[in-house]
Image (cartoon, rainbow, N blue to C red; front, side, top):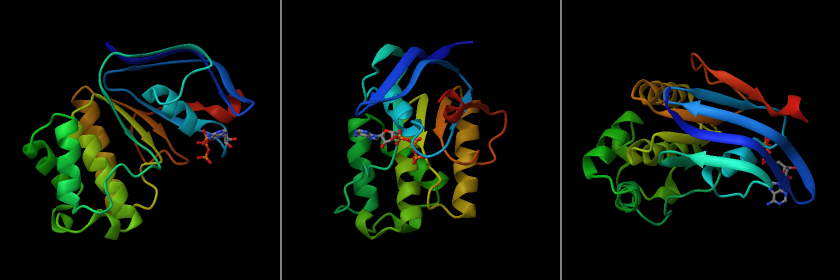
Length: 194
Ligand SMILES: Nc1ncnc2c1ncn2[C@@H]1O[C@H](COP(=O)(O)OP(=O)(O)OP(=O)(O)O)[C@@H](O)[C@H]1O
């Protein structure tokens, strides 16, 4: 088994509150780990620590491959048509147009390619954010509430994309209030650590 992401005895403090400590986890190729727990227990914070966007107060975070993140911050330029906004990130992620095409098809967004991102609905924007994650080719997916606002069809596409990613040797860290119907899913209840 090849580790893609390893957190060892990590602690996270936000404001003056200790959210969790001594938290260790390993994501190997093909793994999916569901972070669950009540509001405010630190699911989003843990995703950000894993992404390297938030410093752990203690412990170590090791990423052995590239990671791609989806969270509540809209990464796509709202002024640009969807396709151009995705192409902007494709250049930064150094992936070609075919990868973007395939990811757009996977999230069924081709009919909206020319629509400005700012005019997309909440669920459509989440699908667009997933296109960027899929197209990036990053083996580690860090998904914070990726299904928020998605209808049943979009959720089914998300679940299929995650299954394909795992089958191809990727791994997923998922923060969500629901397991999304993913199979073979390990779970970590941050509420139980409090
Ligand atoms: N920038 C910040 N500064 C200080 N405290 C913060 C900051 N961001 C979040 N917090 C606090 O950290 C705690 C954990 O927040 P976090 O968003 O990680 O929880 P969560 O489990 O993802 O919650 P939810 O289920 O509501 O999404 C909360 O008490 C929150 O108020």
